[in-house]
Length: 342
Image (cartoon, rainbow, N blue to C red; front, side, top):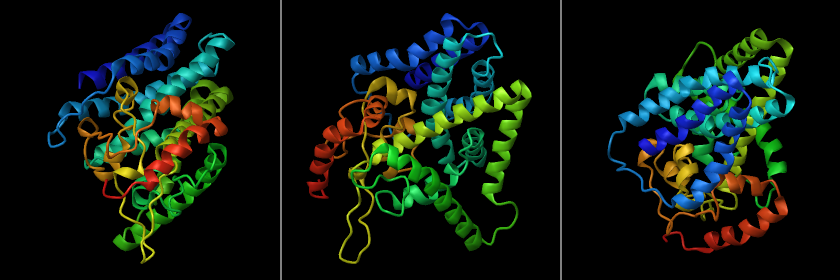
C-alpha cells in the first residue's frame, strides 16, 4: 500500500501548496502529474499485485480519504482557476491542468473504485465525487450498462470499429446518460422502489456543487467549475476509449455476445501511473472480477491485451487519430484473431 499512498497523496500536498502559495508550487504540481509520472513509468517496471484473496483495510482507508479530499481540492481548484488567489493567467492555466489532471486521473479512478464497493457509505461517497464534477449518471451507467454490455453496441462507452475519439466523445456524452437512466429506471421498477430517482439525486448534488462554487467566486467560480468538470469528464471518457478500442465481443450462432473475458480490455503495467490510478489500468481483471479491491487486481500479459505505452501516454496519442490507428489497429487485429481460449 505504500506505493499507492505515496503516489496519490504526494500531488495532494503539492496542490494544497499551489492553492496556498501559488507560484512555483503550481508548476511543481503540474510537473509531478506529467513529467515525473512519465519518467517513473519508464524506470519503474512492472509492480506485482497483492494477493486477491486478501482483505485490504489500508486500501479502503486510502480510497475513503481520497474521496473526502476530493471536495476541498475541487473548491480550491475553483478559487485558483477563477482568479481569486492572485495567480497570474499562466499560473491559472497551469493550475487548471494540474488540478484537472488530479481530479481526472486520481479522482475518477477512486470514484470508480468506490462505486464498486459493497459498503453503502463508500458507494455514496463515489456517487458524490462523480456528481460534483457533473457526471453523476456514470455511477449508474458504469455498473448497469458498461459492465453488462461492454464490447457490444448496447454499451455507449465501447468504441465502434475505427471510430476516432472525437466522434466517440460526443456519442458517449449523450448515450451514457440515456442508457444509464433507462437501466436505473428498469432496476427500480423490478425492485418496486419508490422515492427520489437516483438521477434526481445526481442532479441535486451537481447543482449544490455549482452553488458552492458560485458562493466562493461568483460567476467566474461557476465558469471555472464547468471548465474543470469538462476536463475531468473528458479524461474519464478517453480512458474508456483507450481501454476498449478494437476489442469487441463476438457473437455466437444464437446471436448472443460471447462472455466478457480478459481479451476484451487493454491493460498497462506501468509502475507509477498504475499506482496513481489505483490499478485502474489493470482493466481486464477488473471486468472479470469487479468486486476485487484495486490492490489485488492481477495482470497477465500473455492472456490480457497490453498497450505499448502507459495509459496517460496512450490517451495523448488517441487525440491524434491517424497515429492512434497506425499503432492500435494492428495490435487489436492480432488479439481479435487469437483463439478465445488463449
